[in-house]
Image 1 (tube, rainbow over the protein chains, first blue to last red):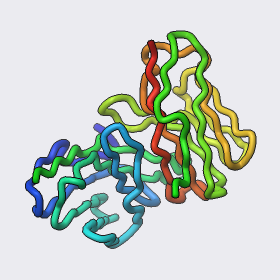
Image 2: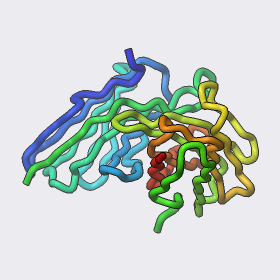
Image 3: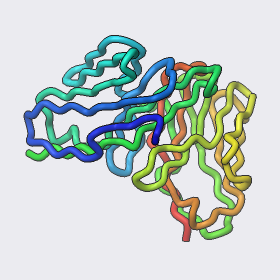
Image 4: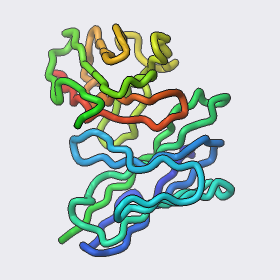
Length: 112
Length: 112
């Protein structure tokens, strides 16, 4: 079992739909990243959070530390949101040397 | 403005011919990371520098080396690339351990 699990693996939506991507983890963490990767491209960090909720434009990320779960929401989705979304947890320094452990990613396709 | 810059974006080399990938940063971050990402897989940490201290992951192949001549630059040297080394190579930086990581656009390496 992976330490970081994302669902769904693939998601297809129509433009304008509200999208949720989920991430569950099984290790102690100091923070959690949500990352975006376009085809053939580098990685863009969307959020880093360790508690509560963060919002940036149409993107919202939440985390529940007790439940070891985070969600990434996209409101009013657009075709340019099509990308792979990766959840990555920053391990505790004493157990993982503050390494990032990545989920497998969620491939999002938004159709016009 | 790009803050973590990787050159080149695409690199083709021959089987067994040494190749060097470059990463530079304008953030003055202390930590620089090299990740390998194969198709449809999560990035895998190869090694990182905390200032001048080099930290190699236990399962990083011996033909992967790194140099950090100064704060701004870090190089990934592959001494004798094999076909299995074809991948996207991502550079990232952070202010310190446990801090948000900023990724470059990556270098896609092909082996002929």
